[in-house]
Each structure stands twice: as structure tokens, then as C-alpha cells.
Length: 314
Image (cartoon, rainbow, N blue to C red):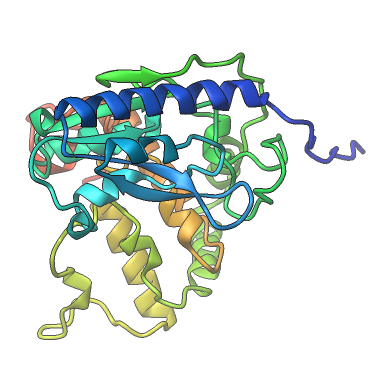
């Protein structure tokens, strides 16, 4: 029997890469604010704990040197243009720092008329990866601490950005985890898959962190909060939990950009991005559609075409 080896803790990238990206972001942000091209820059600054980072809105060119890029820059900042837009007192064009997965969210939001591309200056990041949810951010990024989504990311270079900060380093070939998990689920019987997700959702405490951190949950009042009539039970009980997560997955199908913020924010470690990845896989196989690669007004579940697959109709 082959005993699996523990993931390596050897640093994947040197500090020069992060320093170069940080310097490029600062130079671009300073120029944009000084020239009045944008009124604000939404980016990352150092967090309170060593190695961590947190979102920030910079309006003063003198503060642009507070901006950073590091493996701790995990947040999808597009949230600050939709749900958390009250934090952004927009008075003109806004610049935003975006990793590749964040760019997919921006493209989706533009396609759904939540944002206007002409109102954005996108500072794309040549992103080699970020920390996973439970990693020690005081230590360098390694195979053991890199986020699962980054192992099989296809958008390390954000196409369509107005400016790209840094150069992408040589990326290591890391074994994919989510793809292996998807293959394991595919090998299960429908009954086994149902039992798997039932067990996962049974841990849900209905804190709604997944909804609050998702840039696509931008409705001012969520259908699931309504109690007259009540669409979904609001208490953390099995039936209500299952309904909540299935409804949310369907609402994100054909829209989710794969940032995995929902999974990172979940205090119960429910593999929400695995479910979103499965739905994205279905969209690719059935409709040859991938969400967020370019702004599109409608996805496969928002429109009908005569040549749509109808094999599911019995």
C-alpha cells in the first residue's frame, strides 16, 4: 500500500515576486489618484496579524504606498462594488485590484448590469496563488498552505484588465484536490452522493456567511429571508439547510466565478466550492459554457435555445 506523503512546507515563491507586484500596484494607484483618473482605489493593506491582509479603500495618493499584495490577499474585492458598496463613496471612476478569479466575478457582474465597465479601472494581478482558509499566514506560501482553488486555476493572468501588476513566476505542478474530489463524487451512486451532501449540510448553522461574502448575492432582500410567504425555512434544521444550499447552488449556476469565498467564510468547513464546481462542470458539458470569462448578458439557465439539450426530460 502506498502511504501518501504530507504536502511540502517549502516556500513556493520568493519575496521578490510579491515585492514586485506590490510596487507595481502602488505606482499605478499613485498615478491614477494623483491625475484624478479615479476617485478611489479598492485594494489590500496589511492586516493586524503577521502575513494577513485586509480590504481597504484608498482615496489619498499619499496613502497608496499602504497597498500590498501577498498570499494573504484572499478577499474578492468585487464585493465592495455590489453588496458592500456603501463602503465605497463613489464620485467617479473607481480602480480595483483584481486577481484572475476576481476578474471572473467582475465580468459576471458587468454582464448582469450591476457594474459598468467604463466606470472601472481594473488593476489586474499576476497571481500565483493565495493562502487556504485555515493556513498559518505567518509562514510562506507552500504546497501545504495554498488554497485548493489555486492548484487548478486557469486565470493566473487576468485578461481584460487595464493594467497588470507584476510578472507571473514559474508555477509548480501541484496535484489537484478539487478535481480528484469531483471524480470521487462522480463515481458514487445517486444515493451515495445524496448521503454525502446531506451529511455536509447537516453541519450548517445558517449563519449566511456564504451569502454575505458572495458578490453575486446582491439582492437587497433575499428570497430566502422572506417569511410571507416563506420560501425556505430559516432555522438550521436538515430540511431547511438542504433547501437553502440547493437553491443557492442553482442561483449561482452559470454565474459563479469560482473565487471560493463562500467556502473560505464557512465556519463549518462545508465544501461549498466543490458543489459550485460540480454545477460549473455540468454547464460546460451540457452547454459548452463557462461563467465569467467575458461579460455576457445571459447564461444557459437564463435563456432558451431550440438546440438546448433536453435529455433530462423523461
